Image 1: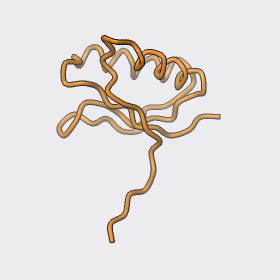
Image 2: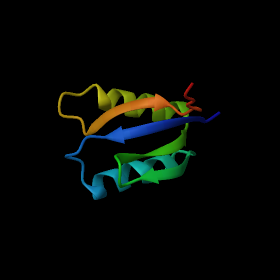
Image 3: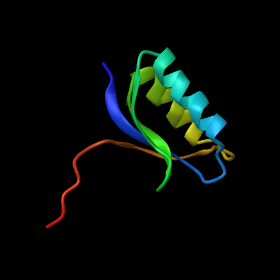
Amino acid sequence: MSEKYIVVFKSTASQEDIDKFAESVSSDGGEVIHRYDSTMKGFAAKLSPNTLTKFNSLQAEKDSIIDYIEPDGVVTTQ
């Protein structure tokens, strides 16, 4: 079962790098829902558990281009 996450990349990530990650989401049974290009580099996606594990492992590497991954959800202000 896929869950929704936001994957944000560091400013050093190229569009080609981000496209490769987005393609890997699709090839592993997930779906990119929205791409963020102007305010930040990244995308919202339904990630399979396998893809989430893989991305988290890559994020932990010293020279990773993934800045952070967080669950997608509703944000409200009071």
